Image (cartoon, rainbow, N blue to C red; front, side, top):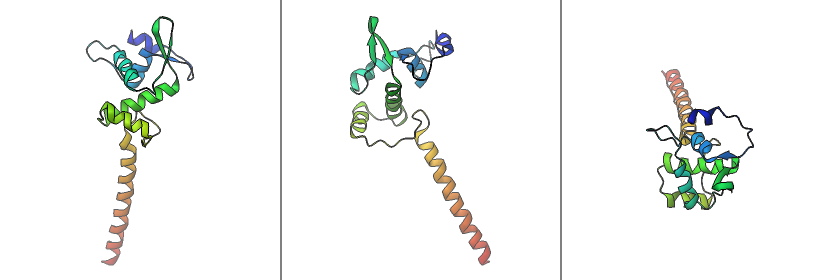
Length: 133
């Protein structure tokens, strides 16, 4: 089943099924290698901003906007370790400052850049010390 879902090619603007979204964000059950769609349904109940289209037979279809929000929720809950209430508050306040790529390591790129800047400053200081000697 997982292989079939991964093999499908859709346009970037096409709506995605709940299984496709679960796979895209990495919600996979490690024991049976199936998408954890129940997690997305649970998040729908708790995050009112998340409103997929529900069509025939209660099938859920997610837009790119929905998927971006899901990735944001995933990041807040799984990567930052926030509680559901904490994530709700952060989303409602709009105070979240993340990378443009929600599934990437949020602090990783910023941290790398900060380290590079500090290393460069240290190099400049060391060069000045060498010139003094």
